[in-house]
Length: 209
Image (cartoon, rainbow, N blue to C red):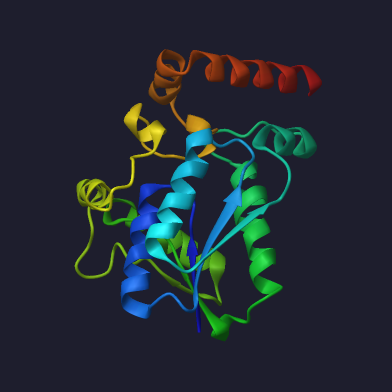
């Protein structure tokens, strides 16, 4: 039985992978990272350090486009209600990778969803059926976010830069098409050049459409 952790580069996926390694060992452990081609450079540093800490096999895959390219190809600007980027570059792409290699009875998929986002796990189970899904951080005893930061310090792993800058996640370079006004205001304050890049990309897409 293969245990596949969706290893996004976030603190939650690392903590979930640690639990899986503790429960099942690392001989059949796969840490699967799907690159959106829009990640903060420090994510890759954290990814390698986190994988070395957990053990198992780190596999990096990429569909090849970034979110703005997906929006252009789909002729649709992602928003808080619909995220074609996540669907194309993560869910659909990983699903195809998985189905090409493992039958549902040959693997278990683990997500780094914590108790504060339990509703996301319910949706994920529907999407990934008939594959078996688990959320190690929700299982007893549940793990909370402040504990994960302490684990990271104890393991001697430097906290990812985006967390240190005040972002709630370590994906897509601090950008997310589903983010709200306060998130983008924060991006403008701490990473103004990155904000300006996405502002330009949005205008380019609007002009194109």
